[in-house]
Amino acid sequence: MDNGKDLESEKLQSQMQSLTEAIRTLAESCQGDSLLLLALLRTLEASHREIRDGLFQASFPDNRQALYKLLKNIEANGGWPYIHRLKLRSLLGYSQQLSPLEDAPAESSEDSAETPQGFK
Image 1 (tube, rainbow, N blue to C red):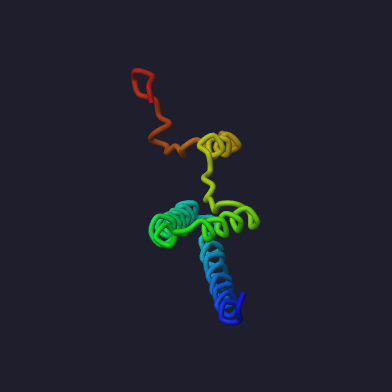
Image 2: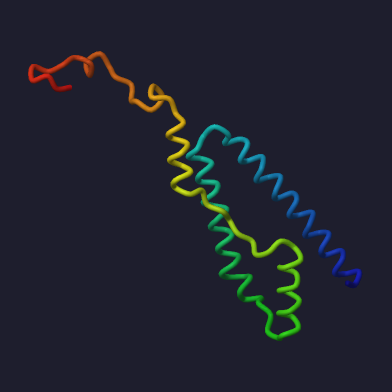
């Protein structure tokens, strides 16, 4: 790699590190709020899709040597980037861990009074 490419790579690594830290800080500021964290995850996924389907595909190699170099890099550096989604079963598993009191909606004094037919 030539000196210009090394500097460019170092600059990119530095920018990506700063971006990663900013995302982590943002996520930590949303800690405890599942809806905000879900919105953050959706934004990250949309950005991933936009880069993959637009910029990355547009820069795809146009000859065998460049394709080989790309595939070799993918193999050597951990495979294809993928954003893992939480499976519905896992999400339901979390809800089963909740105690019955946490899971039940709060009842008001009006809700606890029975009607003449014996229904709530």
